[in-house]
Length: 368
Image 1 (cartoon, one colour):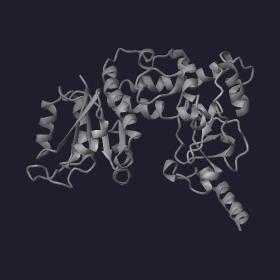
Image 2 (tube, one colour):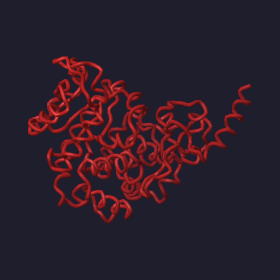
Image 3 (cartoon, helix red, strand yellow):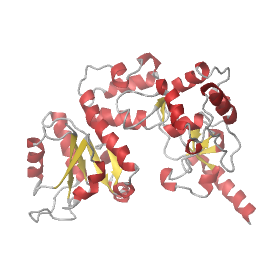
Image 4 (cartoon, rainbow, N blue to C red):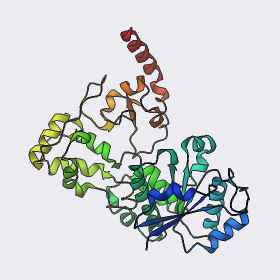
C-alpha cells in the first residue's frame, strides 16, 4: 500500500500541483481547507489512520473553499497546533511539509515557524528533476517517523553505524534530542546531520574530495559502486543520499593503497590513482575555478557548485554557531565578486567583509 499524504490548500485545483510526486509508492490527496479551525482538526483526527503525513500551503485564505468560506488560520498556525496536540498524544506523530513559494516563505516565517516543518518545498522550483528527489524525501520522512517512534532504538540502529565512530558532541546532542517529540528529532537529524557537511558529505562534495568533475565523467556512477561500503545507510538515507566522510578517507588509504592523505593530494594525483586501481578511465579531473590557485579540493563553491579548496574560498554568512562535527561552507572569489547564484549563499561572512571589499576594488581596477 503506498504512503499517503494529505495536501491542504485553498486552491480548488491544487491536485494539479502535486501530480508529479505520485508514483507506486506515494499518493498525495489534495483538498481545500475546512470551514473552520475546529472542523479542520476534527477532520484530521477522524482521518489519522488514512494518512502518513501532511503537506500544507503557507497561506490558506486567498481563495474560498467549496462552501465559499475563507480560512481563518494559516499553515504555520495549523502546524503549531498539530505539533502541540502530537506532544499531548491527541494526534499521532507524522511529518508536516510546507509547500509554498520561496519568497512568501522567507517573508512570513521566522526560524521558530520553520522548525514546525520537517522540510520546505518551493513550488516555484519544482520540475522533472526535482519531483523524484522530493518524492524520495516524503517517503523517507514517513518511514523515518515510524522508526523514531520506537524510543528504545539505539543510535547504532537509527544511523546504522558504530556509535563509537561518531563525534562525542554529536552523540551527546543526539541523545538529548531523543527526549524531545519526534518532529524535533527529525528536524535535528535532517538539518544538523544530513544537510550539513561534516560527518556526512553529499555527492557533490564527494566528487570534489576525489578531485573529479562528475558532470564530465561517464564512469562516475560506476565509481559510486566501488564506494558502496562508504555510503550512509541509516534513517532518511534514500531521501538524502550521503557518504561517511571518515570512510571515504579510509577507502583512499586501504582500497586505493595510498600512502598520502587525501586532503593534501592534488586532484590529478587523486584521479590518476583511482583510474589505476579501479580501471575506470572515464573520470575527468576537476578544473580550478577562476581566481583560485589550489587543486587540493575539499568542498564546493556555493555559488558555482564546483570543487574548491577552502583556502581559496570565503566563508559564507550565517555559520557562526556550527556544531563541532560540522564544517563550514565557502564561496569562491569568482562567485563572490560577480554574485553568482546569490540565493544559495546570500552573503560572505562578516569576518570576510574587509577582504571582500579589497578584492572588489582590485578587480574593478583590472577591468578598467
